[in-house]
Length: 383
Image 1 (cartoon, rainbow, N blue to C red):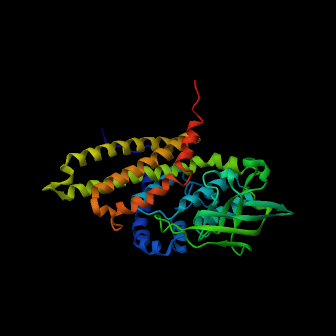
Image 2 (cartoon, rainbow, N blue to C red; image 1 turned 60 degrees about the horizontal axis):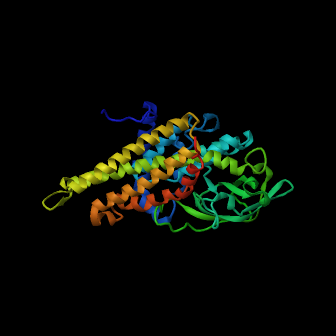
Image 3 (cartoon, rainbow, N blue to C red; image 1 turned 45 degrees about the vertical axis):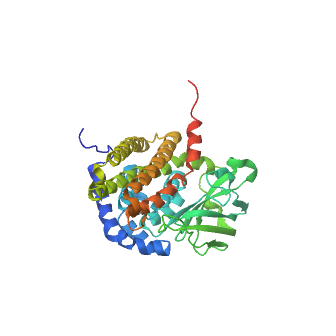
């Protein structure tokens, strides 16, 4: 069989990805340890990403985007995974995607060009201390008061929250309606009375990706901040757009599997045990053979899903499959690879050790994997 080539990887996308790889290597990777220590990347990184055309690459140039498609975003996710560091642009892209689909023309003109340039950093405010994957259970309220909404509540696990100029906030505009009472508000944070950010949360992994709590105490935002044509559309909007987000997680999962195997293969050929390389031990070869098979299956499935996403026909259940199965196999693969490194795998100076802790969140964010299985199960009906 000839070397496999992902069908979405056109020459133009490959060139874009190579540019991204060089940028990651020269301008991001040398600073990761410092960013991990401070809990967030430098603000200037966002403007450099914008200058390079890496922000909102899949949106139209009329709004500052790169006129690309989902393949360009997939290439960026692959680059960040292959280099072992992601600057947290996933939520930024997701907010841009929501704005492009549901925003008014005025909202698009107001925020998308700044997001594309990196002058505006976007975050998503969905999870709460008492409501994670169950978005219907959010308690943050927004009550109408004339030409404003008054917001009270808090959000947690907000990636990019430290720098965020714009937060896409899930709120209850009518608590009595359950899911039908959820709305999305676009909240500009600069000089916003009643708004504050918590300190970066001390995560076990992804330490350079800032994650904070956000607090809203009688915060007033104009009614024009509502995303969509009316109140109560937020839950349906989120359910419709979550496949876009979950595929990003699935793409990262398969790339991490491939990277873990690449690192491990190099190690077992170099490492000696019992007078021979680790690779010559049957257990090592069988472990790698099994993981290579699973990584290949994951790659083929994810590539097919990327094609369906480009065609606009990726459904929620299939995206959930890519998310839960991909991240499950990602964590299993990295764990098995770490074992082949022995004690060295437990050291943070070895990439496989960092991958072990960084990958664990993949099974949680974007909807816990248990929720993914429920989404899939709902589609299982007798024929």
